[in-house]
Amino acid sequence: MSASSHDPYAPLRYPNYLCFTLGRIIFVLGVQMQTITVSWLIYQQLHRDTRQAAFALGMIGLAQVAPILLLALPAGQAADRFNRKTLAMLGQFVIALGAMGVFLTTHFHGPIWFYYAALFVAAIGRAFNIPALSALMPQLLPLKIVPEAMAWNSTAFQLSAMFGPALGGLCVAQFPGETACLINVLFLGLGYFFFSLAKPLTRHVANRAPVNLHSLLSGVRFVLKTRLLFAMLLLDLFATLLGGATALLPIYAHDILHTNAAGFGMLRAAPPVGAVLMALWMVHHPGWNRAGLVLLWAVAGYGAATFIFGVSTWFWVSVLALVLVGACDNVSVVVRQTVDQMLTPPGMRGRVSSFSFIFISCSNELGEVESGITASWFGPVGSVVLGSVGSLLVVAGSIWLFPELLSLGRLKELRPELIEEKTSERLEELAV
Image (tube, rainbow, N blue to C red; front, side, top):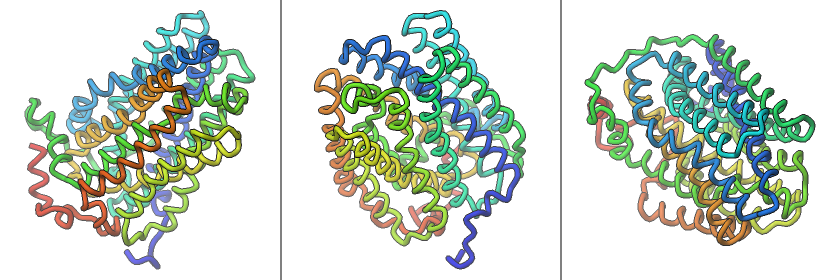
């Protein structure tokens, strides 16, 4: 497709995709509000001991990542064998049950570990929901406009992540804790309704290969054999694992920047603001001739912006740094997800998405664990600064280990046979 014929709004002309996207926006909005609410409620109980609070906030990530590490691969296989929309809706229902657990814990003043248990249940739902959603999306519109759809997907998610923390911070500042938790549940229900209206354009052909360890690990084998995709997953994993600072934002808001719950919500919303601005720019300017080089510069910018945030003691400088963090991170997300969808055979998108989801969850949730533990050792500033330096070293290591990242050109011209000496049929064999 030439630049003159590029239509950035093509995905939005498909009603099924619009319902899918609207439902996802509202649902993620509720999840983001819940994360803010739980983080703030836990911190308010433990704020007198900063090190204990940092560790407790880090454990939120562990509660959310453990089920994903255990269930993501079986969930990916389920997404390739069963109806993907049904599986996604079942996952969303379980997430809503976890949100009800958070509400009941707050209402009855339960101990902190009850919050972890509720988040654990919600993470079980996410383990099945995310691979099914990722595999379902290409069935809602023609494959040729998937790159544009991926940019809109990122925009939708980041809009939710932008307004979710702001609304969550506003709710916990203005309402009792249980009221804020109930509002989260209502958002999840509304998102579930809109998502239920989306109907795939193409029928999913279920994979009927025997359920065994070989088929379970086929997505893993595909990613490992597709070096470009594997390189991007590793780059995202270690850069975000080391450079993430979101778990420590309650401490930064209260102890370093001296702001309130609303200010905390603004800090959490700042990265999505940058991500939305970048995603909208990418929708209208998709024709990068050297997407791999742009990706590497973006990850390096992510590390540099995280460093600025780590050392800043001025609220608005910190907000601006987090905006840059989100903008740089979104480049990585869109490029990686586009490569994933363009190179993965339709019959194994669930299993490949589930393995990719493990990397993403490890980088985000385990990054929160890492931040909490290192902050308990070196303090919050030391944790963020050391992590940002680590992210920059990851970029240098990726260039050395995976030079094919530098050779990645235009995403619309991406084909399996152009990346590796394999045909699409050979890649399909990995699914068996």
